[in-house]
Image 1 (cartoon, rainbow, N blue to C red):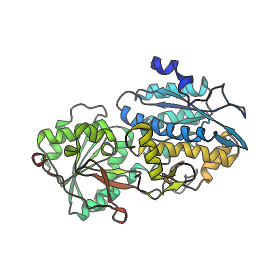
Image 2 (image 1 turned 90 degrees about the vertical axis):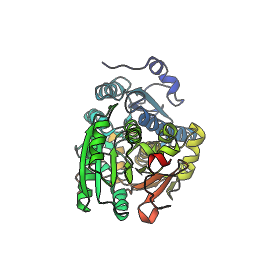
Image 3 (image 1 turned 45 degrees about the vertical axis):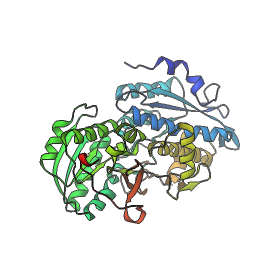
Length: 412
């Protein structure tokens, strides 16, 4: 059953980025309507909030400048948000509603590749372009769906620079734990494959439910194998749980690489800097990157604007979602139209340098076998320092500090 929060359902007009009016479908006036089913509750609520904030950042920016230039006429953007509750069935029903009842022109995707696969299939059926700010699994882009686009680096590359750096530190054996959802299974598969190619021994691979509340058994099985490094692929909630479990069982492997949690402000806020210190994570974006564009300015400009608006630093999910919105803007302005096929062609032809990094979407029939993916974008690895700050430690040519081993829990 589809459930929408009463407050959200009754305030759509008020929260639709300040733009009023009726549907713009088939019209060249009125607001350009975008629909988004994003997790405000459930297991993806932390990441969902970051994703939504990224969309809001872009909408605020574009509307502050009068809207998107569509063939010489400025049109403001209106976004209709619903809470998908982190559930595929709900997300699918809400996507159907946004297209069939709310008559949106374009779609913003949810957080999670699993939800994006489910909802983009509906968008593709109705030939509505979905801009996926929170999806990076290879499985999103090998479906031959020509209507889904994401600016994110693919999950297959998430742990590569981290593993390479750890190997240089003498790591020979790794243990892996992952949640059983689509993106994290992809990360696990790529991590195991890359580790073996590098000559690292994978001593244990454990799967846990994405909504798990007790992972002690899985953690103890990995601990028993005594890996040099522990790699965790899961949501922020799973990363928090894994860190607390390591502390509770007194296990401090030499190195810990977590795929999502340490990039979110919630991680240090809930654990404290002393507990979070030393944990590493791949990230798509950092404010000291040299990226810039004519819309958001530099990566640091975006960081400062986000901090002013929300009172905390962004994880990479917010800028990636803003970059998804920027992709929509650039494509519509290039096409001079909101016609779906003209915009889709503009996206396929796009080669843009943005505050989030380079964007170059793969076309149908690309040699990679992927459609709508941004396959040439680099990935960084960060480590939490003693102050709770993220510091780039890999790859070597962009590192700001050397990787440090994890301190024993009784030495913190």
